[in-house]
Image 1 (cartoon, rainbow, N blue to C red):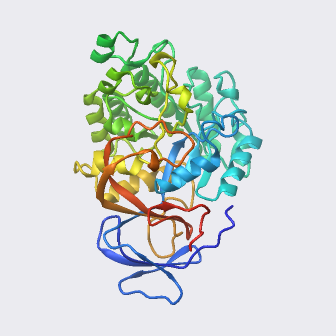
Image 2: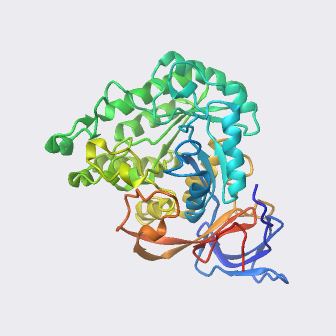
Image 3: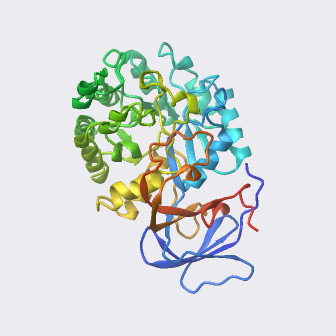
Length: 440
């Protein structure tokens, strides 16, 4: 873990989840006191006038690439990107090399996150050995390891075999785990380059039909109901998928779902310029789908926002569309995009943002002590966010190793001013610290 010592901080005038201004006294890594007119000798005073205090953000879906793909990202660089975006906890997907399908690899990832110190890095274990979809990985050993893995996913690949999926759902029931499914029928998406629709037809690109996602979700919610286990749907992206999740929840199925910031804002119209920054899996969908996932997030059908932060080196994107890699970085921009797409449109309040970007992802991941409210006695993990500025998102905003953001050059509201993890500052006055807790 970080060797930094928790700071004594006196935060003046923060609006907790957008409510009335309140002072916060942070001492020994916890929130010791709240109220107005607080004072404390020797505390570092933080002027939070006009700033919104949110619980430390929790991302259930991040690719940190280490071990094996350090040219794209490392646990350290990804942790820095996360802190810059207001996150204090991230869940790391297992598509590394070697794959995170054993206790040894997930414990290595946990240790790398502890050494970096910016955020808590919680490993996600693979469902199948090597993410090949053929036989179950060491789910129990990963669950019993020091990493205490509770989320398992073959993300990047669908657990396509229904018998393997059933067995995985059955297995994780023993320790209250969850299978996070990448819902993509591989046969229906062979050679697919973008969303199947008007734009793909006009461009002559092989389409990625919505039913490839929806059919797997429909199958899996029925399997989860049959087994009585927990299912989580990764990066839901279509109107039909929202309808299926809504139906399943009314039926009592124990299913949760996430949407990415980019699926809340961007559409397949952006593909017309063949800019590979907009190539992603699942693909950017139609305007109707964007409106449907926004509504699904607003009414609680979709439980959380997760970035699917997917860094790639420049050469993987600076090439012809067909050869380009899928994926976008998203940690540094996520809160600002949710502000733009959901808060400014009146669909969510800041209390809802705290739920979908902090409390709910921590609960789904069964990670106690994370995503906790900004309240007395709770860990002092929070972000102070300024909703007032609006400026162009640029390369200077990106703190990870890769620069494949779809928002470069786009006007976005807001700014993360402070990120504090268990009383240890990682972002101070809008600047990412070189070392956690290193206040002048």
